[in-house]
Length: 231
Image (cartoon, rainbow, N blue to C red; front, side, top):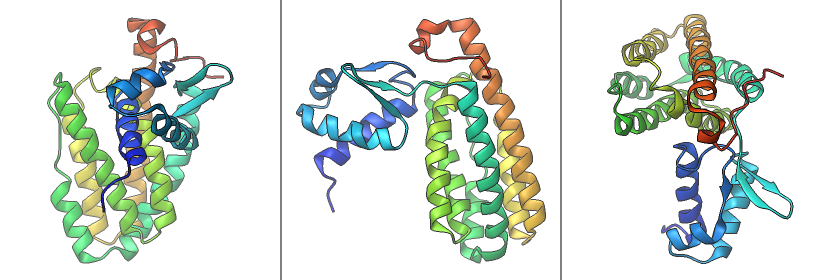
């Protein structure tokens, strides 16, 4: 079934937020978006209302909308929740995933990116989101999968900022392969342990990215949105 106009606009704005084309903290000019996407302001407004529910934009009274800023406090909460949810998903997937699901995960685990190639970053992060969503779906708990998908959308914005800091391509590829190996062995404890270790390393990379962006690019580069205070 064809997407509605609001759905199309929603997907386009969401993509620009996640890839930081619309930077954290940036004001959203609804007339400009309407012109860019060749539509009226009403579909833009309805799409922004949906994105507000996903915490990707924030309404500001008498001002409009801004892209939700990124803070270290936000990242701390997200990674705490991610550890809880993805650990549970990995444990359940090891127990309940079909053999076909496990085979598909193994086939898709070798994706990587080219360091200093922004276009490859986008493709890599799309594969990364799909991979973690597939693990969550393999758990058999669809509500759990939906929550993980929402968290990954929030984190992808930071991942886009951080891949340029250092080449972690091989490390990340091995992380995914280790997880699929544990899942195929039907070892829930090992799968959970691997996920927790992965998330710890990911959290360290994200914090390094936020601190680096805040100090090297300056607040203006992110719409004065990256707040490095842990409070």
